[in-house]
Length: 434
Image 1 (tube, one colour):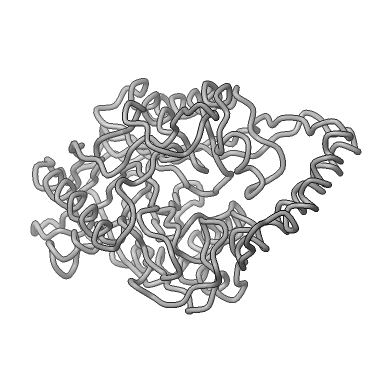
Image 2: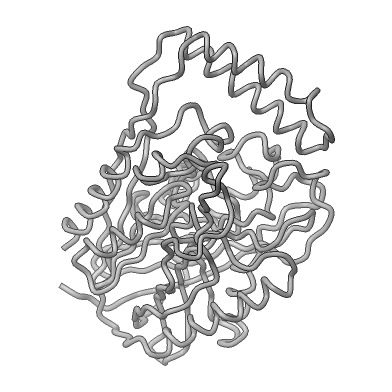
């Protein structure tokens, strides 16, 4: 049964101090050297029969423990159940290091502590600003990305696959006050925030998109960006700030168009659900293979033609990872699993699914096709960042996401059967919320 919607929105700056490590690219020459544009976190509180809170952050990602602290803090301050709070990240590669990725930047504990307090306060701010509102949703065609898994003679690599799958649209949730004033514009699109690199702190193209939407609507409107399933989608083209700004304008135009055409209703059904999976991981290699791997990583620094601040950090991280794997091999570890939360929020005939990690776009396409909703959006990097979540088919193809990147995230890689488990869980949550 629908009830009058109450909604509130808020935004805070979460830019770190200059001199902290950036995260996302390996081999950087040093820590951050300046701030090109501020990083922000935004919150949208929604309430009818049930409350829901969506938080988005201009960050590479957040780990499960940090998200848990934020959720618990918000629940203590507002009464919003932790399971009704979804925390997503834009995955900008020009923001501060956080605990979800190791050896691509050192997390500053003081910044992390302040960040968590800010996110708790942000949730309280959005809750306190709640007022009667109307909500509408719509999907608009647009794309700022390209499938990056390119097959070459040497194997699967990160490149340009113009025939590869993408999700060439943006899903928009538009919230207006009862006086017709724009309150919030939440939008989800799948494209890695990697247009920019270097030593400047920046929110990349999603930051431009959010700022442009807010400039169009003026004071009082909060824009929130939810990164989609972009594990195999890069922003395209890449390079200069002018390119990122152009991508932001393209995305903002689509967001505004969808928001203006969306039919906004004051009575909204809201329901939330979640489930925790134990995703299967590969067993460690044999002891002999693990020992050879450790020795190879011990030799890496000496074999580099050029060493930098970033490569030294990465080499140390690779060695530490290989030693953990060796310890697992010697212990005879088997049947390893990784905790994985699948979350869903229903807003009338719109379903928002939250998945942790660098999820491949095929997951969003399967959920979109299988869910019995007029519109379904899947936000990745939600509530945790477990690393890459490839499809079963991608496992067979290999490539960076399958064979290499796990060193930055955990121990052994998710098994191919994880795909079916995750998609089934998301679809089951959608059915339950009906």
